[in-house]
View 1 (cartoon, helix red, strand yellow):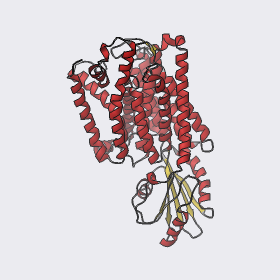
View 2 (view 1 turned 120 degrees about the vertical axis):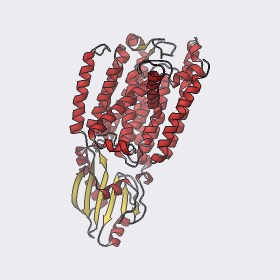
View 3 (view 1 turned 90 degrees about the horizontal axis):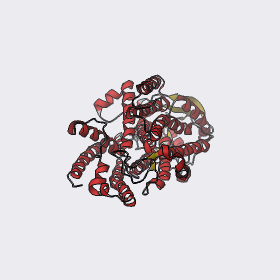
Length: 525
């Protein structure tokens, strides 16, 4: 049914995509902000405003948990109001999302901000100072910012480093061990499934490996994510909303994974079907998580993004394109997985700075899964991630980028975009040169991608017959991509809030790609 020649599969997938798209439009998860207002015995109004939750239901659950925690913060206070806000007014946006001075004292919390307001300015300041330096259940020390002073952003808070490190280490280890073990099982019993899972030698113009190799490493990567999900659910049993975002990620990723893994096994799923599977995953993510591309810092495009159908369509196409892009660069041992590890480390660091727990932990889980897989894939090439792994990886990276921008206005959209610039531009440039330079179909496979030119023009791997030397040359391609990717990630980490720097640097990177590409073309084989 999934044969490229089967129009029925395309019709069914398109219909399913439209249904989920409609669900995403009408039932899209809307972020809600928990807001609690107290009055202390001195009649100082204390307002707590927390970072966005994925939807109203999770916000309401967090509201109850936060109320109990805040009683410890102010045991003699009276609750005046508890609510989940779907939108923030200008003052609330200033309080929560910026470091702009305000006319009353504030405290930056681990996951929000507290403000102190009174007709007597000194009473308000005293209430704020009373809490300064106190250790709270949120795991950090508080610091009062008096009125009309610059207020610290979340990135300047003194987090409980050891608690965060413990959770990160557990998730990383669980995902890595699970992924490594499943790879081991796949290789241990390779003879049982070789007729289905092997990627044959020279089975296509883009094949540059020396021995038949299992291409179902995506199963191991997904297993790592599932292990991390189970750990997160267990770790946050007393606070289920924290792990919901992680679970939604996994649920949304299943269609794109299955579309790819079926191709790995049957070798009979067309590109159109795989793209539809990736669009379906993107639509499910919009439905469950609610994250759409809501800004690009390009005025004309940002105005268009205010229209929800356009934002949903652009997000779906962007995520689908990123899935295909990661599959395109998955041509050599360690290339796509190593590139993704670099991008994930940068995303995790930014998420930590803005206190986005969901993005941080999903990044760590994917990082662990890839490290477990990399032990077997690079440099010896014993197993490939295949289409299932590449499409899953592309989806997770793209969705993390969208969610990081959607939930954190302080993050420049060109930070996450820049981290994925290489595979995306590789895909767009390949389509352009095939259509307008080579006068061929945009989807026609060839051996003229940048990584393939490195293998042919620099490493001369295409003329090597010895399997061991061929594998070494294959694995030598990845570092040529890792080095510039690492430099790019460092730049993003330095300027993740500044579009004025990241946008021109992204354009410059694309120009540099074209220059290097044509320089390689001019070299002898």
